[in-house]
Figure (cartoon, rainbow, N blue to C red):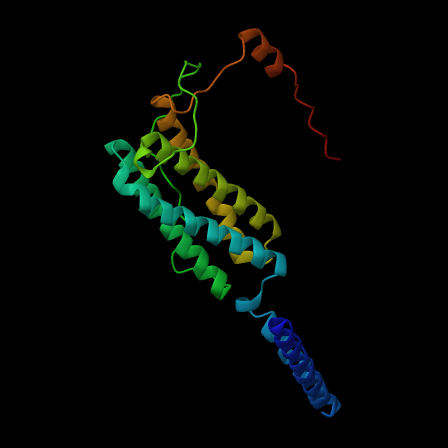
Length: 233
């Protein structure tokens, strides 16, 4: 009840302040009044504030998701047993951290970031082993001591996919041209990280990839045909 009264009081105060502001503007000469609104509009549309509401929420989601991934990478790093996985995590963490800083930079300034978006280069080859082998069913850990490389690499894969999804949604809603380009250009990096981690998981049979019978694959592969190019008049 006390909080409700405080909220109501704060709301009434905000309304009174708004009325005072509008009354003050109303008594300005016509030319000064127009100048005031023009200056206010310029403030809103300056590079720093050149963001739509939907964009703000979606980019906030991108940054918070990335921040969570970076924090978890730091937490699990010392539990990694395989040097190869440790190398992957360190490279991905360093790249993701710089990309996070680049996004924060352009998001807050609305202008080109000091460090532009770069391309992530994985070390893994593109070899996948197809087929499914019997393995124990997966289940949630019951205690922290159960953490292992399969769990950690699974988290890394999920994090890269989540960030890629968040960035794709944000890029489609972003109005600031610089922020949109930075986010859009960084999506392939998330895909590359996810691909790198999935190859590592597949090599250790954590991530198994089934295949359809050849006849079924062939049927699906041949179920589309190219369309003739339109002739320009």
